[in-house]
Image (tube, rainbow, N blue to C red; front, side, top):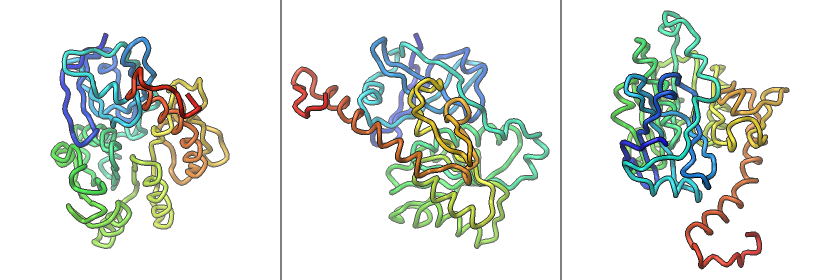
Length: 290
């Protein structure tokens, strides 16, 4: 059993949890993910690692309660336990393989959207601990759903933007990136992690700007072990699976339209499961699909 030692509400329906998982914390690296299961009847939920503390045996996760299973996760409290937690899974960020002295010479800009802020924070903290300073753009629709701001500022040169202009730069992350470049910033690499549509448009912009771009395809993972095939995607002319070959890939080679189409296949099923969870015994299956 994996005990929850801290629970925090970061924004509406967005939760942070610190969980006791010594073996995972000992081996985790930025960019990797884990799989959690609430109980023996629960579904497997893949989540990228937000932070880890090898000395104290703690891993930190951030998730948004959207479907039935993540709502069940949100109902857990400090002291409760997950039945299963498996990891670390996936390939670490390739930044972990680059010599630190070379990293210090690189001009890197991270772009974080929504709960994608969590895995971005993990990489930023690792870089900061190794003496590497980078820029980060954090975007949200409005100020109220900005998460982990203080933590992000502590490990990067943070630039916040909101679609409605309620905080920071007015506009989306692409507007913010163009503004930074117009002000004289130069970047060798962009790392974008967030909603699929955000990563798609970031890659369209950086391709025009000729900036190498890495994206994390964790949003399309389901099983997390390469067994289900749900996270199959085309990267250039090669078939890849986000969970075992990634989750990070060259964003300029990813077929985002195909990946987003695959994501739609699972939305109806998740909606039905959520209704069944919410309605309990009163759920009669009248939709004809349950």
